[in-house]
Length: 113
Length: 115
Image (cartoon, rainbow over all chains, first blue to last red; front, top):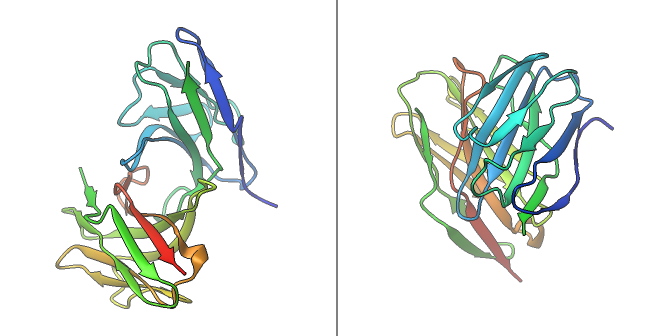
């Protein structure tokens, strides 16, 4: 079945370590997104990519990095520069143009120890 | 930038009853899309319903319907015949037609369904 796969579901990190969250989609979507979700807040956009080898910062990109080497993959690295990385991270994809809905993965919960 | 406001952090409804979740948004654009997403305890976001701003007719999907008031910038979700499986966080979202990457979410409303 088509969909978005995020891994790992749960991740623990020590302070000062970088971690990478995986996001893979087989929906043939050009656009992919990373959102952060904190309790009591809506989703906030970290990075997005409309095409391979191109990506743009969202509202809260500081302390994060991404790559888009393949259409299907959009990994997110949470660096040690991110001051408060404990959160739930959601990856999404969509067709470009037309205002279509976003399709989401199941999310990754990152906890900094 | 567009903003989306959900003024009800929590709502509860009796099973089989009807509940309405509120959403307002702020935009200067004339064409856009509005969405309601459901996030159950599994945390995966699921699309409930979608509305194109240029359509006057309110969208419906089985027990879910919206009341879209463009002039008032209001987009409420009505859930009829509520079921236990409807218990979840509900997020209202706005997506610009002109900036395809700009989807804005409200803070969410937690819906509890009482048996």
